[in-house]
Image 1 (tube, helix red, strand yellow):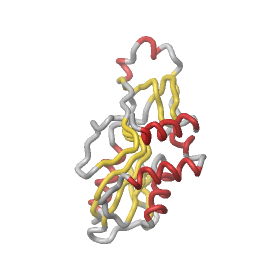
Image 2 (cartoon, rainbow, N blue to C red):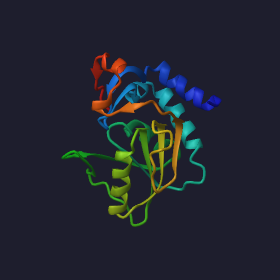
Image 3 (cartoon, rainbow, N blue to C red):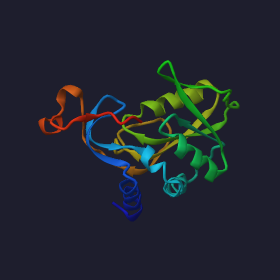
Amino acid sequence: MDSQQQEVLDIFKRTKALLQGHFVLRSGLHSGHYFQCAQVCQDMAAVSRLSELLCAKLGGLSFRTVLAPAMGGLVVGQEVARQTKSRYIFAEKENNVLVLRRGFKFEPGEPVLIVEDVVTRGGRVLECLDIVRKAGGMPVGVAMLVDRSSGSARFDVPAISLLELSFPTYPADQVPAGLAKVPVEKPGS
């Protein structure tokens, strides 16, 4: 782990955003670790620093708009947009599906960066990519604070993360005995 990744991990630990226990993830999988980014988002200096580090990794990506899925990506997406002087919009759930509301639209071919807090399987990112394309925009990349898949979540645009970690996850019917003894929490995304 390089010094930048260690700094990111230290921020998550200091803000109590990296939890240990027995958790049901949004994906339905079980894990002994959980990133509760809402905890880090209480500390605006931490959000600013994490976003600064993320923006530095964007390299040659050119975009005019940042799209974040609600809830997890909202704060980080807005801060990345602020730091890059980009337009900021978000997608939110309607009938359990992410959609654009509130009059948000894209110009034809508008370059869009999708920003998320934590990606495990990438379902919300895939929904956002689909939203952008169906609305006439052009997704140019995905930026995330934490890639829990350690790079196994794949997208058809470049994906950038500050931290790649792969804590084991388990289907509900395959939870190891030691983890099964720990009370289950579903902290929310």
